[in-house]
Length: 323
Ligand code: SF4
Image (cartoon, rainbow, N blue to C red; front, side, top):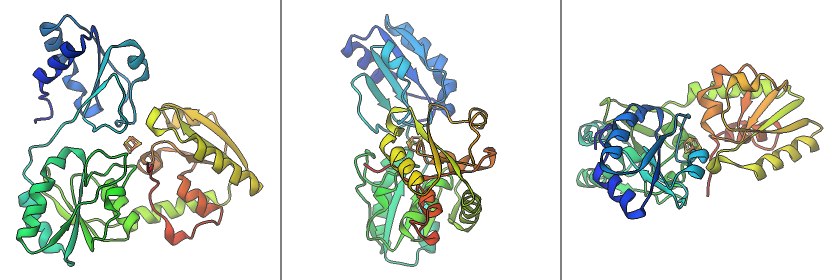
């Protein structure tokens, strides 16, 4: 399916089957430009009133709770379900990019025999074809099941690399961006080859630059006396028990630590809290992706263990929400 083409018949059928009168639509930023066009089509073919969420949306963890209270049915686009909710229908978006040309390159970079395959939901329907290609070219191919936070075998999220915890010698990540393959290489200590069917780029991920950046931030946090421990109010990001455990650890170490609940975590909102370091228990990507934006260092729970001396520096990895 093309990014802007949703299965309208499926959407209309769902509305009619449920007898829904008020519909919510929620899109991540990259798909939001489709909102008005789709709304018009739904309104032409049904009697339903449509409310579009204009709030930021980062993942399936991030359902618009206001809309959920208001509407009979919420369509959440672009992500695979993390937790099922009665009123929510997830409409995944799949890429039609061909994976074989990038696999032809990637396979030449593979040194071992057992290759693990991981991807995001956008390319998940191509994993079978990718596995067949690798098998036909003499490689054993493993696809991990993952835990209950992921919907599909081989699927990884920015907060969950459980599908990569398999007995592979190295991995091929089918997809774009550095974050997911970095997470896999740090979680498994294995090589990860990125095969991006969209940009046609094939390369090995290098974790050195991000590790240097993280070590520098942790080194600053070593001098901190006051910590702000952030808890997300987004339903599938909330880790209040972890946050309380971290606070207890901080107090035991003679440090001051405050729990701060937030929906959107932005540098502007954090400016009000005069602490030396933030520990983020919300979406694990925030501390990494937005590191340069925060004036006060922000570390992950894993990195906080390093600060407290409970974890060796060389055991650093990305924070995960495992279920
Ligand atoms: S917590 Fe972050 S990485 Fe995980 S699904 Fe939500 S937005 Fe994505």
